[in-house]
Amino acid sequence: MTPFIRLSSAREPEVTHMAETGAQNIKTFHKGQKIYTEGQKGSVAFMIKKGSVVLFRTVNGKRVLLDRLTKGEIFGEMSALTCSPRTTSAEAAEYSEILILTEQVINTMLGRCPKTVQHLTRLLIKRLRRATQATADKTHKSSFLSICRLLEMAWTCHSGMPPVRAKKVPHYNLGLSVDDFSRQVKDVLLVNQNEIDATLDQLIGLKLVEVTSRGSSKAFSERYVRIKEMETFFQIASNLHRELTKSNLLQPELEYIDIHSLADEVEADPKVLYKKMANMEIPESLFCFPRGPVLSWAEEQDENFFRKVKRRRKKIQDLEDVNDIVFVDGSTLKDVFARLGYYKLGVLLSIAGDEARQRILGNLARKIATIVRDEAEARGPADPAEAEDVQDELIEMIKAAKGVAP
Image 1 (cartoon, rainbow, N blue to C red):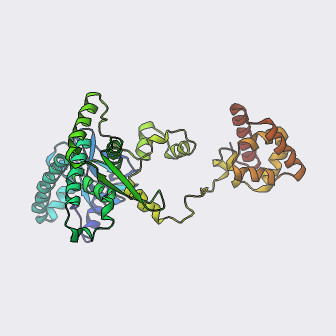
Image 2 (cartoon, rainbow, N blue to C red):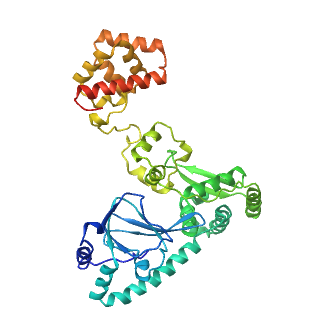
Image 3 (tube, rainbow, N blue to C red):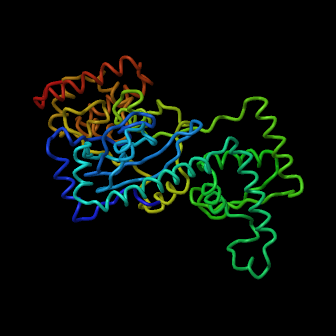
């Protein structure tokens, strides 16, 4: 998609200089933070000094991505020039520094370069036409039925392919490549991989299609889909759709948000959400990944990446629980353990992870370590409230020993 306005390297410093006449003309936005919302009145435009921004519209509760802009690009200029409501929403795609272009700055820009007016007008007309077409063409009320219709069309082409051409298609006899079919669907419909997979699962359950996997690794296997009975496929799928509609089992298409947007909505620190995910406090059914991108990323990782968690080193003031003692030096731990006593060490041992258990036992005398381990095993699971209190006491003692305020 054509960028909204790409300034040349010669002109960008000039605009930046005009916009930076005061510190108030530079604003920072964190990833996922809204810059403005569709329908809001606007009198200024924006230029990206650092980072990137996504522009989108919301149609029938779905987010329609229009463009992703990077350093040097201007956006929001339509409202600034016409004093009309914003036709799109703008959101920081990463940490970004944005220059505010006031009416005075814009007029100065236009006055210094008369040809810009004609160019800008052409861009505005083209952009509005493109945005309208994108939201109209890509929004469908029934993604289930639309996916079924596209599958029917794709299978007709696949099964009717001339033998000479079919020989050139990898694993033709297994059926349609699910990855290839998914890309075709997403080029036509505003759906994500989860919706496509959900539709295929429903069709498999009805025994309308069969999916074959190829490859030794479950995570990276290739999938192929075949329609069993072409003559009755779409009719049965239509009947299913009608029944689901009557029973209100067709969910409205969802808008997915990333963890930073969720943090903004619930007024939390993203780091806290990450920890809650790790502690399984957030239902795993809410974790969704775009299949193509995440598997491509996974393939680039080292073979041991998914077998072991790399703990980021913490400062003393950031310690939170017993598992964080792996970041504390041995002499401090020996001093604190000596003052805690056998019983509390046994409580800590019963809730600690493997690395923390090794740190506890490794910083005790051999006989004492045996006593603490035996008592912990004999006692069984620790009371959660008591364990929390002992952990808090441990962390406070470590911070006090290191001269850090709790």
